[in-house]
Length: 197
Ligand code: UDP
Image (tube, rainbow, N blue to C red):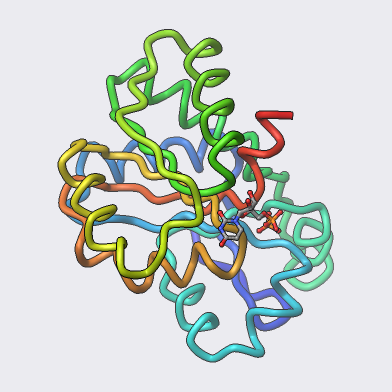
């Protein structure tokens, strides 16, 4: 279905099942990294002010209605009945799908202890999940080529970007072209902190 414009941003009219089917299609049939970004009122405010970032959202492969504000705005502006697809819940569902289908997953972002704990808890929650690598979100710029090489060597198909917004969207714009195995990158903001508690 058609992408909806909401206050200078966009959102795709998907529910959780539709978002998950789209992700599965990206991994099974895609040939490049696809971006999955969350849309919420904070971004309606910040993204249109930054032309590069605005362009990145415009070109995103899937824009999920993360917050209730977007759902309400879609109803008022387009008479569209969306249901929320919170980024944190979509991430959980992608992990479940990945465990079931054998997709390899890489976590990039958050502080080292948070990343380690989140990886451990995700592994416990989804015993079949292959977390093939992780990196904390404080990799210096000169080590970025090595990180990209590590992601590629891991063969990860799913990359969770937990750098916060807009860092994660910028990272995708800069590095997606260097990723060889990744088919889906979800920007998950502070979700690893939430998982690690
Ligand atoms: N973070 C990071 N690298 C940085 C700065 C922040 O990995 O250089 C992480 C930080 O540890 C936290 C997340 O990015 O896990 C920021 O989450 P926040 O809630 O600010 O982002 P949002 O969910 O609002 O996009």
